[in-house]
Length: 79
Image 1 (cartoon, rainbow, N blue to C red):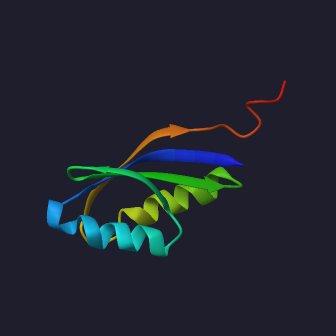
Image 2 (cartoon, rainbow, N blue to C red):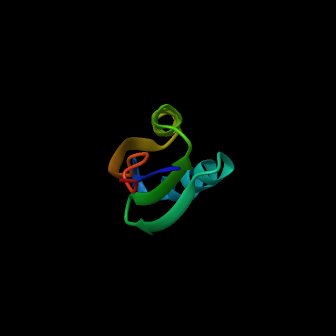
């Protein structure tokens, strides 16, 4: 399982509720909200799926930009 986390920056504070609703509707876990930033967590089986999900976040109405701050590497916990 690969885990990716980061935040979505919205255009305006008034867009928060709409963007949170959109994120939840596509199965993105929300871990926090501060000002115009929404912290997200994505879990998936492969890096290409994670990349597609992050790219899709950029197309949500009200989103200014998407940032990736952490991701796990598949098999990194194995010797």
